[in-house]
Image 1 (cartoon, helix red, strand yellow):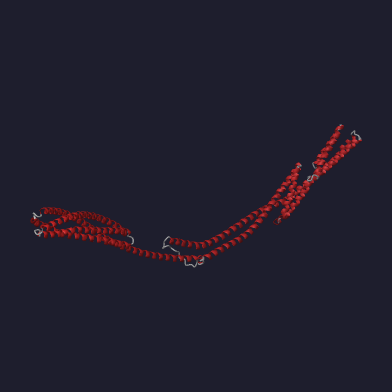
Image 2: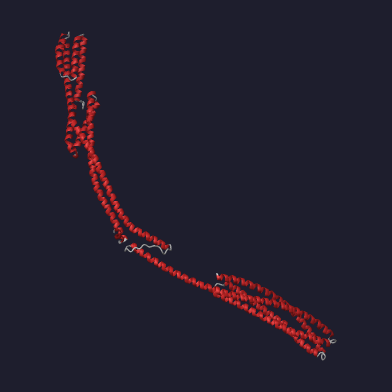
Length: 609
């Protein structure tokens, strides 16, 4: 329910709620800490008071014990340090008791504390009676009395000894014994001392052989001695009474001390209780802080998970989309918050990317189809060019072979013409030498040979003309083939190498056509004398038929024939040379046609790829 409610809120609202919860948690923790702190403060105060009472009670008990110890030490040893220690301890005890009585929480023992304080003060007063606290008290007087008694005793004994009276000395010793009893604190020693003086010392003094002055001096010494002993006895009695009173005071203080010890134990228990309260308050504070932290952490985790988990899923989906995975799972968030907006935006983005990829694929297919069509057209065109160039090359090879055959035929014809010219030259010489003698025989023979030669020449002329026509056709076809190759390369747009080859073919064809034209001219030059020979032969026939009528014409004809034969001989040499050149050029054309076919094959292979 809470999660559904939070999912319908925007991220900003959730953050505000989180901040509000944090502030509420801080305020609650502050209130809890304040309450706990107050409780801790009270517990600490109780603990402090109880601890203070416990400490004072302990110090009072220890102080009373030390006070009695100093008293005993002083009474036994008359030690001044013990007297000083008693004074310090009594002052401390009074201060401790006054402090204890001023504590409000110690009201139940305030009366005890006041009683103890009064008792300690009275005990100190009694102790001052027997102790010389300021150097001018009873202790100093008692000491002086004791010293005076010792001095007087020594003086009296010395005087009796000087007089040689042992009995007075015995009496003095008896008095000293009474003195010891008096100093020991026996009250009856005073009366005993007075009795012995009257019964023993005074009669001895009056019977002694002393002058009046000596007797008066001894009597005064004895009076002083007795007075001193009486004062010392009084001091001892006072001391005894003071000691008894101090013992009584101590006995009176003991119930208070015991009550104080009981209260100290009660204070110790109160200290433990205060410590327990403080520990409880601290535990309560920690528990409250833990509860606040757990509640705040739980709400914070719910809010954070409500935002971070969907955002993490959307981030993973966006990463998958960026990596090209169009089937990435996008969490369906129909909420109206920012996370839902991001989810819907990612879905739209994925749809747009899928549409764009489909359009891109369709364009790629169309482009591939166009490339395939263009490739097929190029391949078809290359095949057509290959077929045409192959046909042209085959025709060129055939033409070259025909040229080679024609050259061979021309060579044979030239050899035959040269042989026949030689024969004609020989016959002409013979005719010139024996024209007149063998006119009849020469006429018949010459007419037969001339007719035969004339009959052969038209056939040769016809054969040469046909071959020349074929060579012209070959040149024309080569030129057309080169032009077609140039046009096809220009149409494809990437056949610059083929254009060079086609240009070379064109040049070869033009050069071959020029050679053929030159060869035709040369053949015409050869045929012209042959025509002349035919004409001369006709004229010779007419002349031979009229030889009998005009011998001079025969001689002139013979000379003309000799000149014609010479020209035929020269033209025959040129014809043989031209035939050799035609043969060489035919071989070169065949090799160039093979090279052209290889290069064109490479170009067509590149076009097919």
